[in-house]
Amino acid sequence: MSTFPASTIKDIAESVGIPNLKDDVAVSLAQDVEYRIHEIVQEAMKFMRHGKRTKLTVDDINNALRVRNVEPLYGFSSADPTRFRRTTAGTGATGTSEIFFVEDEELDFETILSAPLPKVPLDVTYTAHWLAIEGVQPAIPQNPTPSDAKSELLHKRVKLDPTTQPVIPGIKPGPTSASNSSAINNSGINNNNNNNNSSNGAEIKPLVKHVLSKELQMYYERITSAVLSPDEVLRATAISSLQNDPGLHQLLPYFVQLVAEKVTQNTRNLPVLFSMMAMVRALLDNDNLFIEPYLHQLMPPILTCVVGRRLGDPTTLSAPNEDHWSLRSTATDIVLLICEKYGSSYHTLQPRVTRTLLRAFMDPEKPLTTHYGAILGLSKMGNEAFKTLVVPNLKTYSHVIEPELGLDYHEDETLMEVEQHLESSVAIKKDEAAHCLEALLTGLLSLIKNEAAKASGSAKAVVSTDDVREPLTQAIGPLLATAVLREEGIERYLQGIVVVIENC
Image 1 (cartoon, rainbow, N blue to C red):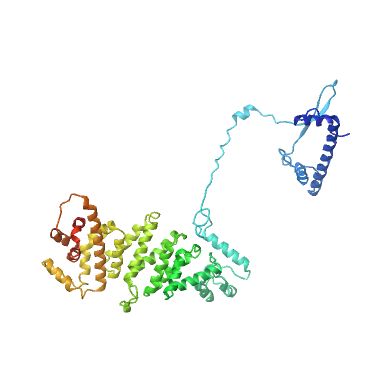
Image 2 (spheres, rainbow, N blue to C red):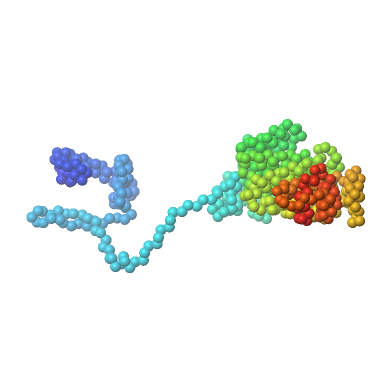
């Protein structure tokens, strides 16, 4: 006879949609339920004994059900023990039976209504931040500070090498840390300064953050040696690799650092400067590289090649490979490319570059080589920049280059005499002043042609060369006025000359 009556089994069967369950089936199911419950209780008691307890909990039952691969119970927890109360149901005529139940808590409506309303739960929100950009963690509150990163690196190094002493600022390490200092520099590119300082008893610094693979180290060494090689084929191959290789993200900061160091240390070595500018141009042309974070490091060496005082060896300026004018022109093209490519993202980039070039152009203490680079850069910045910044200063600047060209104009000289002076000074004018004059003339003619194209559809009065000769001389000086009016076919652009005169 089972502890569970057959009527209970029938009630459960009716609740799940099985009516009229036979008596013998109900008895068999009741016996099987009792057997299964005995198994679960025995497994639960094992968990209770292993837990050094004498009271069976709901967690023990759940663990036993999991062991038997049965879904655990829901809605009960051993952290909140349930107290059962006993009562009797039925009458004396029908018989009474004991019933156990959980007593519900009585709630007072006045207490519920007078209680303050609970706080409104916060909406689910999501925030995103850059953990790292091209291997560099941005300085935001979500990321660790540089001091935390350094202390963590130092802690790891000390933990891996128990013989290493910690570094205290201002206190030199002992012999043990000095002897092990050569192992500090495990980066992809060795830092000789750290090794030299460690041998002299200087402070030991933690490991560098960036570690390169052996393949990238070999690639960097081969590329740098090839770019600086005198072999044209080898150098062209290296530049082509930098321009098209998609896997140079980790090496990009090292290439940028190399350009800055080589330009700073080799201002008298034009082949090295040409190689560095070719490397910068290749990196800019590589669409797979994210070079924007390194623009502030690239602009100084590039501008050095544009407005540097002396580029190349002064004793060999006449040699074919010492053409620093071509270097300045190449660097100016790179500056223009950067402004066009990243000017929309960084609105202060082009104004800062223009301000630097204008300051170099307006400084009379600067040499003419610097003036040439500034004039070339301003002319390539566009006709509007040249018209606004250079044209109003042409007459003043013409007095700067006239002595260098061997010219000395006076107010009582006629334009015919000016032309004679210009023709006779070709043999004696200096190369630097001639290049500055050529750069000014190129920018001025480009502006005149552009303004003439704009005014071609207007109904302005037609002017002749004689009408604009005197006003143009007063506006930009006799030197540039004569050079402009002697250009072939200038009669077609007289309307542009009028605009230049009005702008001065």
